[in-house]
Amino acid sequence: MSSEARAPGSRATPAGPALPSLRFGYGTNGLADLRLDDALRLLADLGYDGVGLTLDHMHLDPLAPDLATRTRRVAHRLDALGLDVTVETGARYVLDPRRKHGPSLLDPDPDDRARRADLLLRAVRVAADLGAHAVHCFSGTVPEGTDTDTAWKRLAESLTPVLAAAASAGVPLAVEPEPGHLLATLADFHHLRRILGDPEPLGLTLDIGHCQCLEPLPPADCVRAAAPWLRHVQIEDMRRGVHEHLPFGDGEIDFPPVLAALAATGYQGLTVVELPRHSHAGPHHAGHSLPFLRHAEQTAPTGSPRPAPALQQAAPPHGAPSTAPEGSSTP
Image (cartoon, rainbow, N blue to C red; front, side, top):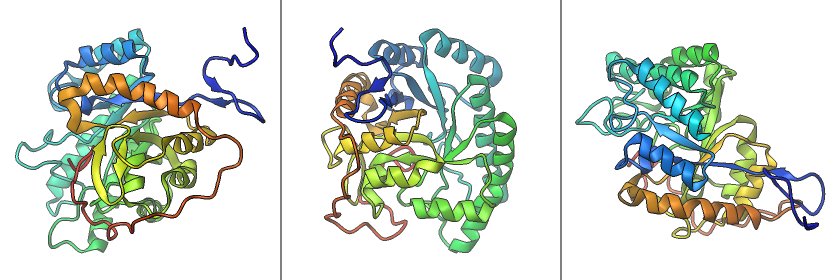
């Protein structure tokens, strides 16, 4: 064995202990044309560490009968394939065939808000049964005619029973800042934390593309700022000011510094590729994404982080929808 060889699951650094390798997954919302079993087998064969499982009618339908039985079958399959899992809740029409991502936690009708909260409660139970490391969710967009203070109040009230269930199940709830939503930025996540009293089960989903799209900090700095609350990570390429999930290399993100920052946090949850509008070529993109990420990981800078580069464009107005809404929450 050469002097440059390293132990599996670590990345050598010129000084100090080796950083643990990141654990990559692929989202099933980018494999919607495959049966779930075929999608899981594909990801295992490609060498992924896990899967971001979106609860939806084409895969694991959270509203169909015998959810617990079907979940146990999926758990056995994941175990047999050696795949870890995060449960994601960004399905487009799972609750309403006429309203994309509707109803939301911000809807004026309390019964509609309760339907979305019930979906999240189901997701927590599924996650517990699967041994998932987190449940992902998002706030939703502010309904027309609703003021911001009212929207934040609805969000906090809707999430309170979900957080209680997550605490009982031992599964963190990872809220995603989503361009165009009430909770659009890292600053908004901290606002929600303060409103709720910083509950222990409340964590963060950080989408690396969204950082490039919207945040005032570069993506690597966003990772460092988010580290204490990081429970789930989504990743894809993106351009500044345009919310369009892109295959790696088609956007503007410099990935080696981002992955170095993520490894340095000690994060060991899944980092899930998020390409929901590329499902028609899902196997192709799944096959190309993992080698790209592993190469970026191995070429990541080490040592003290360099100063973050200045952003070349101003971010869109806070919470404003982008010119090409897409992704796990606003495709």
